[in-house]
Image (cartoon, rainbow, N blue to C red; front, side, top):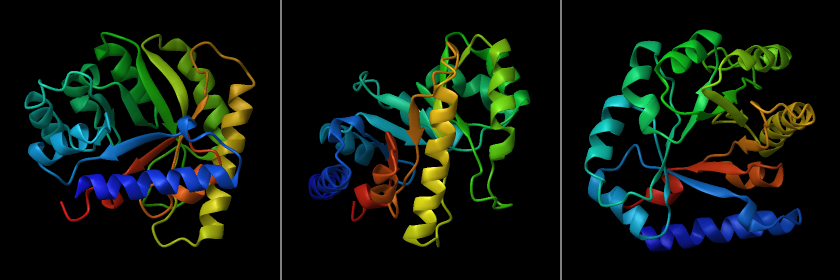
Length: 225
């Protein structure tokens, strides 16, 4: 049941925050609903989780069309976004978690009808299979985004390897937080960089302890649905 799963996740959020003296309200739970259908997604919303994330353009658009009775949903797109599909989705979402190139930024600028809240994706782990900007190129990347007034860089995003240890996760998340703090200090109007999108079902507790403000939880929330 979603209510039982949600109770467990919220308890873990509370416990993780308590360990480091954080307020649990500083963490936004984003339900990754990509593996469940429309009715089950509605169950998630009825349970009180209003931030939902998808990672496939077509499936997201189909699902959103069926969710008109939930206008309060805050939509997040967390997948790799091909430039040719930007026009289909960019004005349908509230947050984009995978901005990783100037070419993609240019397409968002071209197609956006509003300011899009974006997370710059950083490949902290250096995995060749992962998208993202390398840490040493981040500052230059964010500086160049000043030219795009349809993009607001609200924060940074990363993913730890699925098979990583807790210590490896902690190092990755801490590294992202240090980058985020460095960018935030610059007080750029177009890139406040106050947020950290990191942590999934297998590592969100560690991510919270290292400063995550948005956690993307799928399996732990929708299991047995």
